[in-house]
Length: 91
Length: 456
Image (tube, rainbow over all chains, first blue to last red; front, side, top):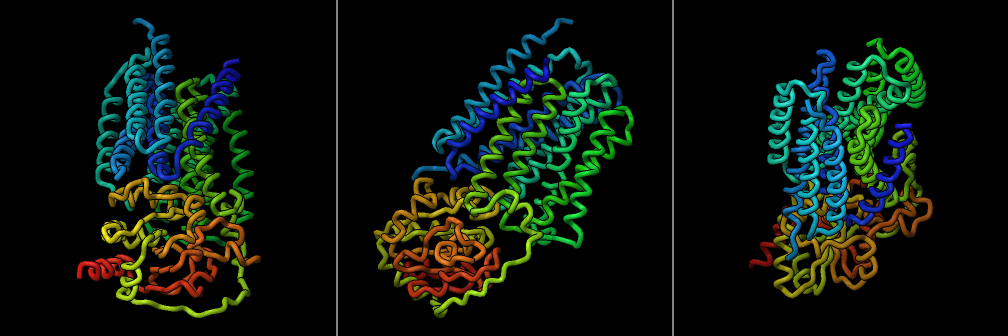
């Protein structure tokens, strides 16, 4: 039953995503992609319980690796997006 | 210890709301920066509240990973040149994929009694994450010219791909039926990595906007699959948002080339179309000095940039020329084709870097409606996206692709290194039109010469 409930969430968020991103103008497509990169670093919250958990050494190390990669995505993604968006100016 | 599960999930709801709000603010350049900030706050609160998870017993690895990750990410973000943005985005896509692989793998290693559903979604996280990683690395290598940008194909590649897909299905079965056997883990990840390489290798440089968008979408879908494996709502919501964003961009890019996604992904396998059509007319070269006299008299100028502008790093010189033209009383507009450059929005970022106002950047349809009113169209480092063959030559390989109708402007200046054809290998009738003049040489040099003429 939990699978069905999760699929519900997936279905609704995909529709929300489509509606929101359709409205992003072409001029912001690059920042949109790097911003999306940062958001996909959300795997970090999944990695945290692995990196700090006690389900075996391998699982911990992989969790730590995942946390590292995801943090690169989160920090790098948001910073570079901000750097780009700061350049978009009106005259 | 007190169980914070309820609190954690409540904060996840707030976090998801903020992600959605952040994306909503991204729909206009004036609010976009705030949107990015809102989105980063959403991420921050989600991370902080997750640290209360009762499964977390030690923090040393977490602290080490987060600190080193922040240093690497921050360093990359600060140091990167705007012209290298496509490379950075594809690397970040790849790293996102890798994170999902590690989370998925860690899930199967840490639990021995997983349901078939969880095993299946974990398999998906490993597969999509692996494909995203190796595909992005190949895309990065192509973009940074570590390997040739042209499509790389070998004999029997189509057969090899079919075989690979069969093996992937087989590995899924083995992985789900015997999840404790490490061999199957390696098999799934290994096959995913090979598949990613095989998908991106046959794709050429000019199709990179499609590939990057697609890999962007995959990195979200991989996070989504990991979310199913961990039964984590926020991972699913955020992953789906990224997945949807990538799919929309992929779709826009494909439409802008009048091709289907399947066509783009398999284009390397198709024989190069030789077009028999002869183009009438002759090439009329022009010196930068003569171009100056036309520009000086022009009332309105439209600039159409392409990948060549990025290569020549000509955006700052262009901005300087724009200022001179404007103080001379002319109107200056920029026309951006959706697939100009190597990633969606590539030209816009470079021009923004050079301080060109976003209100002067126009999309293809807006500019085409009034292109005939412009005195001069300057085509700089673009070819296929201004090729009138797409409009008037039935049978041309790019016939039907929406293009910027540069040839309808009163005068056309084409800034070009030499007479090489564009990516599609199609001759460009624009160069032979009566109203078009070719200015050969490095684009930045040419513009600087014109700027010097204005100064005199």
